[in-house]
Image (cartoon, rainbow, N blue to C red; front, side, top):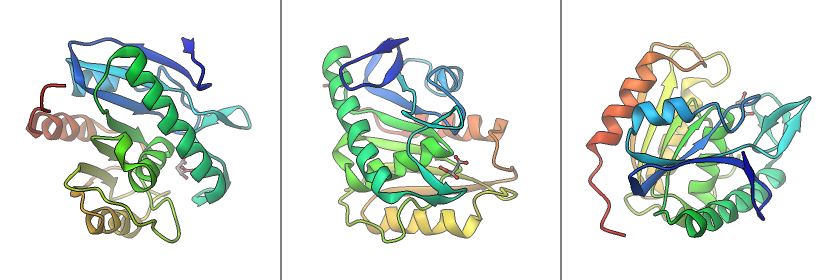
Amino acid sequence: MTQDTTGFIHRFEPGPDTARPLLLLHGTGGDENDLLPLGRMVAPEAALLAPRGGVSENGMPRFFRRLAEGVFDEADLRRRTGDLAAFVAASRARYGLGAPLALGFSNGANIAASLLLLRPETLMGAVLIRPMVPFAEPPAADLAGRPVLILSGALDPIVPVENARRLAQQLSASGARVEHKILPAGHGLSQADVSQALAWLRSLPRPEAA
Ligand code: MLT
């Protein structure tokens, strides 16, 4: 566990692929350890950067405040998206990393979507597992061909599939190359998420030498 000047407790797991590290963003109640095994499974060579969300909801870490389930404090989300972008920039310099691909689950997927929309320079692309639309009015962003995989659950009681479709449309309209898969799953992670993320990450072209 490391805490740096940007204030995020985090774990960094080195890997031979520093050109395309994974930024692992956990769900509500998770922490910096949660997604390390998933990250290693879907990107065996990648350096892994895993911060802990700085908000506590009754002791459960999150990346931003919410007013109710699925109702976000958008001002807080904007501010914390900036903080996370600063953390990524500082970590890239500290660990010698290229622009990361986010791998976010639930609350972590939602702040990854916010990073894409507000700070597109931060991410090379993203795998969003069970995300929803982060802002009532989508900010204008230039995502210029960035690859995004969205994995939704057909039986998800928290995120209606229609909401995830809207996010896919917003990101596509901003220029991202979006693939949206609806899995026979609920809100939780399933084996299908692992195999879909692995296959999609393998299919991405290699980044130019850093
Ligand atoms: C959120 O608050 O980001 C979403 O409701 C997902 C969750 O964390 O339960």
